[in-house]
Length: 632
Image 1: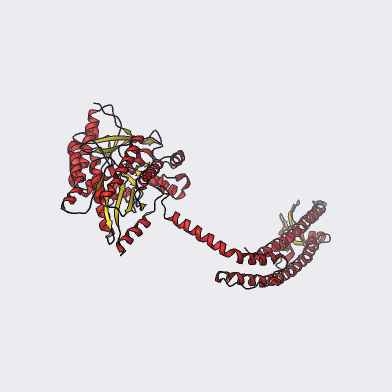
Image 2: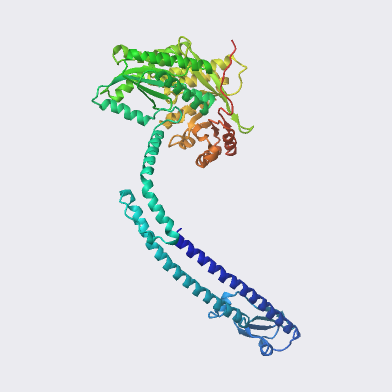
């Protein structure tokens, strides 16, 4: 609000409060005078409480001493003695009685009748109303005079300010004319001085802003975790290589932090960020001695490094150094693996998509070779294409050897009446016993159509473990691919094997991804129905990311829904997530579906989710995954 309007508002409030104060004083006087008049009337009427005559005679007698707005006498037995004068309604032209709310009414019972009167308030109101009217008139006149005077002063200042505004508007044009200081007298003098100073300081300020803008631009395109440039910069760089006519060559290294999902799940998101930061440090140290290089973080767990003016053979030195740093990092953290790297050559004119496909293939081969391994690929020919099939061979081998170990992570119930379970997390190993990245194994199994066989192996091993280890009690959650569950042949196989192990089946909870189940709700419903027939239960994980999540309530009817971990992240500060979870819990409880919150990593998140009445909690703060110990 501007100064002009603020002053008008303040002035209006001040005069309004003055009038209200005067009105309050006069109103109090009116009430006091009214009480005096009512008391006088009551004393007078007490002197004739034995009245036996007519109402009209009573009126003639009392009107000598009092003026009535309304007078009504009702005889108990003889209606001829009844008398009424005036009206209870206030006269419409009596403005004073509308300003001062006062009623001088009284009811008196006589031996033969009943008298109800309302005294005329004119004698009480007139003096106070006249005083109020005169005072209000003076105040309003003073208010109008002050407003007119203020408007004239504002108009004078507005002309001076308009001149200053017009001068300032031309400063960006660097057209600095002489300032008419005579236009800035009194309180406006600092404004004229400031405009003069602005001209001398403008160049310095512009230089400083330009430098700050460069820093902000750099920060906007720099990943805060790794310190590398972002994907947008990577896209610009690889497109520039494809479009340049200048001779240019070097190697592109793609480093995949394939264990990011596992680290987040086993140790929490903070540990995941620390893992990425240290991996970036390994990459930075490896590339520091190889001349011109540019490092990028192209996705959550993928990094890219361009090393200019070296050949594929020369680039192997970078890969060897990187592996050494990764092995040292893995040894210090007692981890199975840190990352895998693929290196390919590039030169001007390379198609970006083809170059990235080649690099992705090199990384895929490296992942099948074991922890922290690398692979160099010059081009995709017949022999190298077989190299990408390493995953198919590796997955087939681990299925045949049943090379899987399980970690377990419990779910904490939020009340004693809720039955929950422990989730089994699969970890895979190649023929040499080296750890393989879980996320990549599952993705490659689906790529090569081997997901059903992989899921069968996981289910079979789970049933075997539970059957041979009676010390393992309670319900167990088993992750299977949604694409497998939607295949009728897999559903028939699973139902058949569970029917043969009814006792174990009743302890199993099959976890499936929501997005995969949404692709075919009819098949999803059929799978859930068939699994329920053999006593097992269903949980839908990563719930809440799809656009049709609520259809699961009506059409699929799982036993559990596991909210995506993004809803737990800082939920104590996110009212939108609180509203969503509260709505999910309310609907789920109506149809007996239990809601489990995942990714709980802080006490505040735990306490907030408990208040939202979820049925269970899972995450690093609740319990860390531990290796499932089996009898030898």
